[in-house]
Amino acid sequence: MSEQVKHPVVQLNTRGLRCPEPVMMLHQAIRKAKTGDVVEVFATDNSTTWDIPKFCLHLGHELLLQEDVLDAAGNKEFHYLVQKG
Image (cartoon, rainbow, N blue to C red):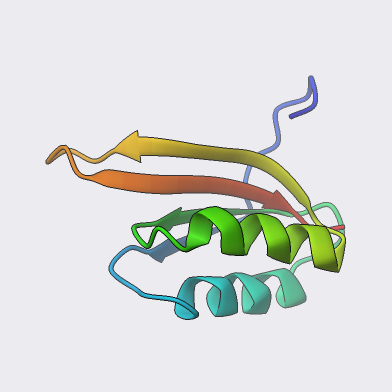
C-alpha cells in the first residue's frame, strides 16, 4: 500500500457466500468504479485467497491488502482492498 492511505469507495460483504459469488460481486463493483477507486471485500470463503489475487493479476487491478482476520466470534475471515487499474 502506498504512503497515502487509500479509503474504499465501496465495501462488499461477501461473508457466507461461496465461490464464485465473491469474485463476481467484486467484478461488478470494479466495473462500476472509476480508475483508482478502492473496493473493500470481506469474505469467509477460503477460495477468495487465490481467486481475488488472480482476478487482480489478470485484469490489471492492484491488490493493496490481503489479510486474514478473526471476527468477533473468533471465526476466520479474509479482508481485501482492491484498487481499480
